[in-house]
Image 1: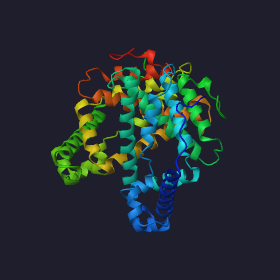
Image 2: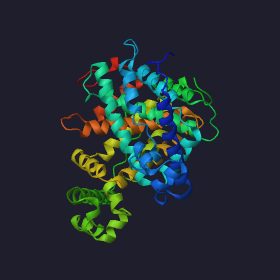
Image 3: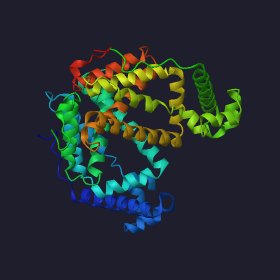
Image 4: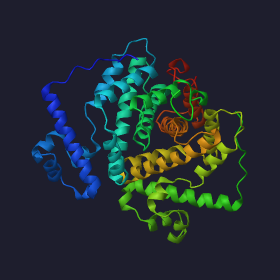
Length: 211
Length: 211
């Protein structure tokens, strides 16, 4: 399927910034996995990524933020893609394409994603942080979907669609991160959305690959 | 629609136990909402419910457990209902009916549910606890669905269906708890499952009531 919005190529400055950001998140995750979140300082993370603590704080406000590693622009990009999607696309296809574009741009790293799930699974306060972030992202998405569809944001449809996007994304990422799962993330995302579009009927699936 | 399994009427002993359990949860929630979770002890909760601390520990292992208030039998009942549902029912209808039966038996209290969401929203460790509980319940449900459908529990369908059940339940409960929402929980649950069965197409909804 076609993309919703072609992403402009990043500038050299943006590429450098993304590299530093990624290096800090990778260092934070590696140190937290080795020693436990509580035993790692911002200074050690910055040091491992070969930058100053001052530079660290240009990217993240805390070590927890570096570990959860959310790109603050990600939600905005997703919303822009949904808003600018062709009018004839139905809402489920719109959010599927917007999600596929976002995941392609963000290029999640499978090993790093597994490491993050391990670190978060051992730390209730990080789990709570991710849950709260997810709730805020879902609420923002409800507004964007309701606006595009001309619906009341308090009505069921935008609330359910926004919640299901998060669920489909989580199921696809978990399957992608699972040992032995060799397929691309985009294939696993399509598999979940195909099932949703088919009204969650079992005939649309097989025990092996996608429909 | 018909129920999946007619629930046997509870014995007098079970009714008494449920009453004590409910009184402890209500007291724990009320005190935690008034003072903050950290400022409440098990002794105070037991006292407010007019039982001893020893009796408290027959029902809950901690005050956090009393506040989150999950019935440990609830998951088992849901699984039993799914396992014993008529073979001709499709999986989505099966989990819808099992959920409706469970919610009817458990009779959630709207004010208490709102109070719990307020208390949990202020307490990261309770939010993490509920998130972890939800993950464990989802994993158990994946196994039950996979078994009933004769599918590999690692395949997409049972994983997505179990995750979507949790999401649909959360969306319906949130709408039910929202100010101004006067409809019964069962109506709101049906509204979410109707949309899921229709492949999340917007034509199946309106800005006002259920389809």
